[in-house]
Length: 278
Ligand code: MN
Image 1: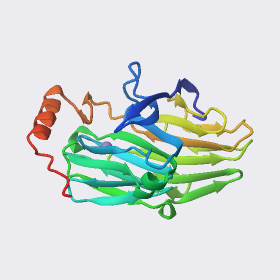
Image 2 (image 1 turned 45 degrees about the vertical axis):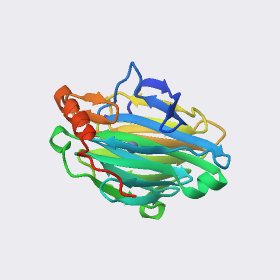
Image 3 (image 1 turned 90 degrees about the vertical axis):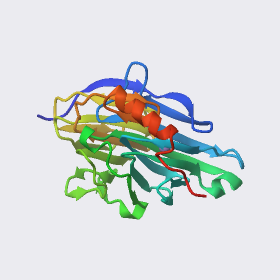
């Protein structure tokens, strides 16, 4: 085994989401529907917002997968039809298992709307195994100081999910998934252990290669990240065991069959997802 080779390098494209905020999206694209078990990756910003310019994603449903919000700068506030509400600040993560379904809103924090400021974060969609798609919705939320770090020479690794060396992240996942945020000083490098059968992705979001996603071949058990640029490098490392299950997908619903999608649409239209109490 050893170091994996890069199978594809994908430039993120820009598009509008929610009520009109721009994201950089390496996938899905018409040519790349998913990277099993991952369904979507969006980078929000970084953007320095004027007062009144912040936009979010007002009330919308999800069923059949997990949404992961990880903030770098700025904060978002969320609430949902299950009565849950909270705030995700810089360095914090919310890992939401939509399961059978929720309606939620994801909005910039109030002070970001009124005063403006810097907004930068990620949303990742992780598919649920078929057996867990209709599980009860639940949340895992961790502040920056609750996410353990590993330091190497010139490198800091924040372990959100999965295991890096002796450190295991706080998020519990339905199938084996790793989610690491790696920061590298110029000239530094780090080797990330990843089980050989897992899908392995590295998205660069600062420094040399900003906005590109590398997809690795399953030909080794580690991924080496090198910052050969002159600026600090920031990397999101995602790895997961492929589910190898059929995917039926329509907007915010990700199920296994078209009948289950029809059911999700019908359940949403008839109010089965509930409402956000305000
Ligand atoms: Mn959402």
